[in-house]
Image (tube, rainbow, N blue to C red; front, top):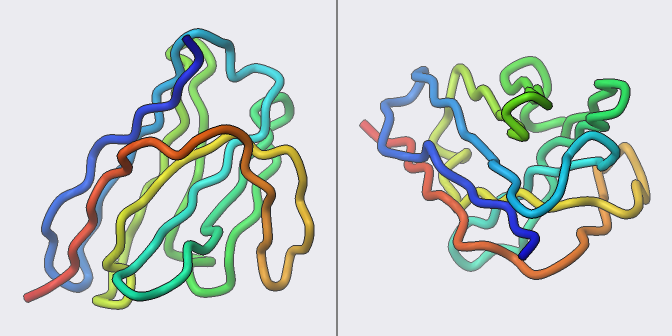
Length: 126
């Protein structure tokens, strides 16, 4: 069964850091693009970042550019999202998904593939 499982969320103070993981099972990430998305309460899900694991190219939403870094470890079949200088407005449930299309860069709009996992909750609060 092909699936992606997110982990690494938690409660962090403003200005702090977290690293999220997106572990793939049942398929290899080598030739996929993987997107990170987030959904805050009462808001629509939005794309945060994209990485093409084949060549390592990355893209970010304007709101996180310069603070978040997406990377992949193909040997571990895992994609990471390093989040620094976190702000309260980063509070959301974060999801990862394979991406079939990059619709636009500004704003970052991606077409996810498959069903959503449980996500991992990130709460930024003092």
